Amino acid sequence: MKNDTKREWIVTAILLAISSLFGLAGFLVGRSAYKKTISK
Image (cartoon, rainbow, N blue to C red; front, side, top):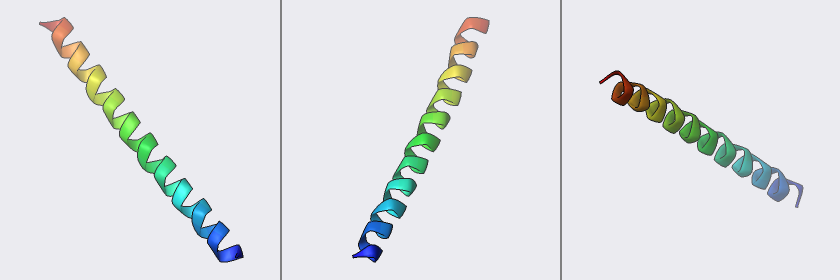
């Protein structure tokens, strides 16, 4: 039972890390695209 809860925590941590990475990448891409449209 302890292994199951530990596995759930690991999966949750991985999902959080992936989602935060995608959010950060999307933010950087959106910001760079926003700057490009302004410079034009």
